[in-house]
Length: 244
Image (cartoon, rainbow, N blue to C red):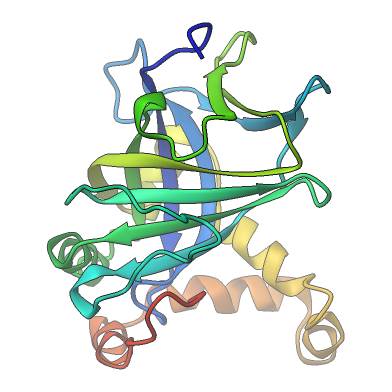
């Protein structure tokens, strides 16, 4: 493990939907935290390398949420041995055969309350500064290193088929979607609309009901709804450790 960095940090940008409160509808990107005085660094990627194979790009992950105030525990498949920490953390599993990953964010009540407040202020982009500390990993066969590419990024290494890991959430900042667009040039609502509209499960239903431009406009309208909608949804959010 000595050949890998022990201090690996990235920023994850996640978007919540005002209709669903705390639910993270879109992982908008990973950003380098080094050598920048701005709120976001360069956009980078996370790759996975199993054994001696070449690194592969991971598909967009599934995102889960745990609420410690309700006695939630991380999914045992993701974290067989949860870390002994009061800090917010992320647990994840990499699936070799599917080239995908599942990430579970575990928060204390203060962090969830902060997310609620920012959602009510229409700051739907949440920036999580995440530290991948190799000293706390529950699986000794797992490690991580910086990508040797120009922008950096992260490569997650494992000597077997599937692996799980842990990273600490060091801080959280929230900005508006407009601010995020100005910083990155990306349109997260457009990305979310494409993923939702062309979802194979709902595609036929969507095509019958909407043209894509109409569907996109409908999604944009959702992000301009009144604060009351988010509050009503938030009161009904109670399912622990479930995909939101």
